[in-house]
Length: 374
Image (cartoon, rainbow, N blue to C red; front, side):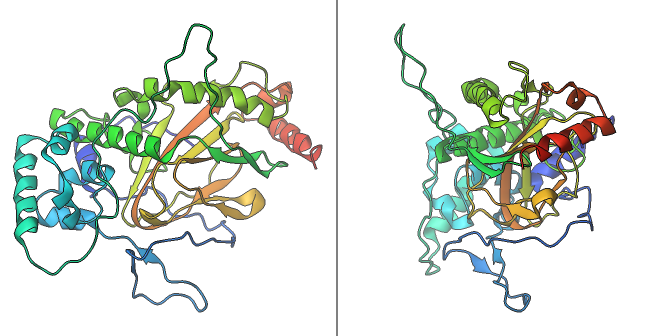
């Protein structure tokens, strides 16, 4: 459920980017029943918690705390832009180039501090043998480029690789973005958030003022170029949602629920998930959830759906589609950074009963509709 707040607190945006803001506004609902969990694959660079786990369970991977490392060097405000550029530990800074620092939009003060730390790391002989795990990048274009088309050429269709998780409850999975596209979106968002601190643009960067269930979120419309960059993909997705629902949605009726959609969500460090909830208290709409982070960047997470008693885990670029009317919850994040793109789509149903706001009749009609599909 989305609620809009009236108060705007300037400090909230800065605290959010620094990782000082509380990471959730709600506790996990006790109604959540036991679910089947699937441990994601992690590479050998991950550190494992020394805290004991339940008998027979695997240890929880703990991701390196880059935020604390940067805080100790006076670079805490740079965490978002550095992480989005591929930095995962302080030693990765040695691989940064002057051009990348410029592209990130780092201000003069932080730029000098970055160079200082980079020089210290370069000349420090501490026997560290860790290899750079990923290529650093500061590009905010290129990943969504399409080939030039002639007058009579057909726009190529993107394969969303749609899969049915549960036809009865209208739960689907697919791929919306490539890995490269996810990384570009993360950089676009974090570079914008960093600049919004300097300009004191309240609510333009990471904020907690729009949605009550997540402590750090950002509207895509506030990120320069993000909506225009992704428009062709969302236009195709909206067209391909109709066959998923087997003609039950009125043609040409699917649109973003409001101009606040889509939006980004960020979990930074250990964070409570979202409590059991639905995404719209009035209408039966469609929810889209896309993971923008690599699954080695965080531990925990996933979307628990009560109707199937299962937690759905997605890889980077994959999407989960379900009706907002389904009870669901976000699982806790144990460590690391998890980024998501979420959108709510409004639609009109062919069955007029489903369009009645906040009505038991609409819920009963939906249940009957599902029963016919069993």
